[in-house]
Length: 394
Ligand SMILES: Cc1ncc(COP(=O)(O)O)c(C=O)c1O
Image (tube, rainbow, N blue to C red; front, top):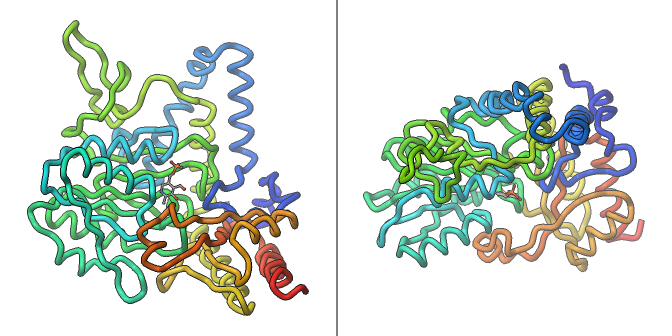
């Protein structure tokens, strides 16, 4: 598929009535995703849930291949989960920690991850330390290198945060983690679907991602990658008889693949939708998607920057398609409501989602506009025009 905006928009039912600039929240599902899910649900209703799964066994199994090829992994290194948080938790809570061990993380770390660090710190006495940023506010790999010693048990960072276009140097972090043999857990939730993700060149051991954001899959989907050699050493924090079959009265055996992190019951319609969403993105081309996302985001920043009273908060020299801003005299929620009344979807990001970063930069709640390749330039300009009219009345 070459990039044909008109066709891609025609295949996106949601664009007809609204301007959707909340892809960092949840992207609009394209028609093939919707059709696959509705068709599958219909079969569940018609012939039964177990029977529909049997009938679609090959397609459902193929979702592992779709995920694996999206991130350059092998299918046995993939677990499908109900969201990115569960994927991340499965990996993180499987790691052993002792008092005095160190976890190194990023300033823009996502709240769900950070509270898990805090819980494990409370339980085990592990220390959480934040890798300093460079002058642009981007994680500084040299500073990370200086922090490494034999007590560092984990490097866990967010690649693209929830609260802005910052793109942390995930591959540079991976090179350091690899060189020192330190497990590296990468939160790729906001990166997946808007930029190429290749676990080998990233050098990560574990990667978590969600289906509903820039991948345009359904809500309630996510996945975990665990590098094969590490996976074989990890016991999931919780197991059931799917991930760990009950093989003798007093014994279970962990599955040999990453599906040891899964449980038996699943939303198969959603899984199928995830697979179709990934194949859809692949057909367009991830590089093409990235270039268009960067271009629309940069157009939006330029347009907003020209409005007095608007301040943009994204960090880094080449920020991704998450544009965060504040409007002088207006709370972020009020801006969101004003735009919603004009059929424009944006979201807000509260300090508590990225508390370290929000505290360091004294950020209030910010408005978050996250375009995707299927948005048009006219939609970007319309958002900017509406923000202008909010501030200046025209
Ligand atoms: C950076 C980041 N990590 C993790 C998550 C959690 O993803 P999920 O809601 O699929 O668990 C989000 C969701 O907004 C996120 O932005």
